Length: 292
Image 1: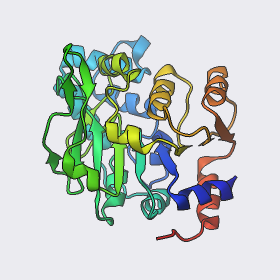
Image 2: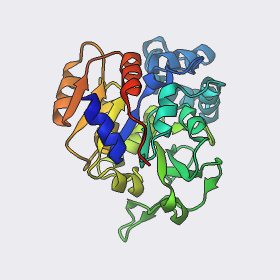
Image 3: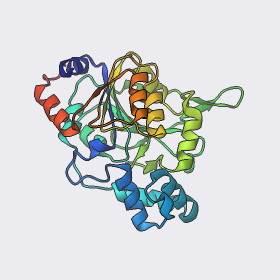
Image 4: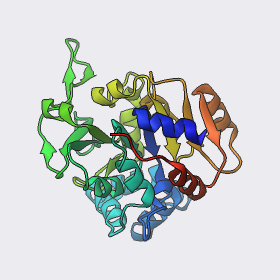
C-alpha cells in the first residue's frame, strides 16, 4: 500500500488532506485537537459547563455573549505560534507534482512550509459573520489578498460559486484551508452559526472553490491526522472529495466508531491502522525522490 500511495504521489494523483493531529507533529505546536482548543478558549472566556468541551457550541456562546471579535481574538491567540513545520509538512511541500493540499485546521504550518516554494497560493474559508456574502478569500504566497468577489448570483438571486481570480489559475499548487486559518487574515469557521451557513450550501458545492472542484477530479485523497466521528468532520470530507476517484486512504489508529466504519465504506477509503507518527516515518523513509 505504501508503494501504491508513493507511486500516486509521483504521478500527481494524490491530494493530502491534513487534519488537526498533523499539527501535533510539529514541536511546540498550537492546539492539535478540538478538545485542546476549546479548553484554551474557555480558559479565557467562561461558558456554561454543559458545553465546556464542545468546540462549536462554546465558540457560539462566546460569539453571542462576548462578541465575534472576542472569539476571533481568542482563536488568534491560540494559534499564533513560533512552531516550525514538521518533517511531514516539508516532505509534502517538496513534492514536485502536488496540485492541491487540503488543510482542515487553523494553524499556519503549511504556509510556513510553502515559503521555500514558488508559484503557489492559497484559498481559505471565511465566516459569514465577518464577510457576509463571501465564502472564501484567495491569497498570494506573500499573504496579500487577491481581490475580487468570491461568488456570483445567478438569475434567481441564489448564491453560486465564482470562478477563481484569473491570476490564481497559473499557480502550480493550491493550498485549500476550508476552515480558515490564523494567517494571514485570522479567518475562522468555528462556531455553530459558521458551520450552519456553510453546511446549508455545501451539498450543492457553493462554498467549495471551483478550482478545488476541478483539481480533485480523478484524484485520490490521503487523510492524515483526521477522524470522522462527528457529522461535521464527515460532511466536510465527503463534500470536498465529491466526484474524485474511487480510491482513497486514511491513517486512523485504534478502534473506529460505527459512523466511521460506515463513512469509510461509503467513500471507498482504505483504512491504515497505524499511529500517525509511525506511518509518516515509515512512509518518508521508503519514499523515492520526487520526479520533476
